[in-house]
Image 1: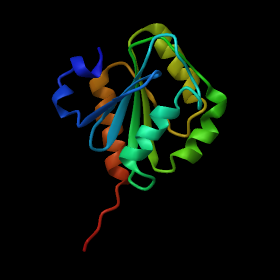
Image 2 (image 1 turned 45 degrees about the horizontal axis):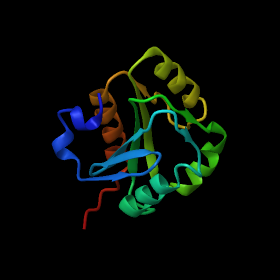
Image 3 (image 1 turned 90 degrees about the vertical axis):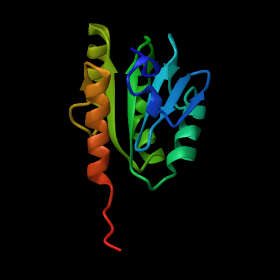
Length: 142
């Protein structure tokens, strides 16, 4: 199920599309749905990276969910560079809709600092990643 087909579609604040796919922004997180057959690397995701930085800046903690509604490949060797681009990315998850997607998420998890990034349904992924972000937001008593 795509995010716009879900019960949370009305909560989407902003959407940005590029050749790589579509980003759906919420308050504390974004959901990316990459297009069928795309190879995701720093070059093909340049617009996606720009849109994430423009929306969240470089200090507000945020989460990112890859909703694998399509089949695509990802350059896992660039993971270290992605971490340096997004110092405020505090939670990451992959929602898989079939066995191949789950296997890819398991491989991807080996390159992530975060444990338990794989989710079988969109709502579980949204809830878990949002809660992980909220845990990282500093509380001010002023």
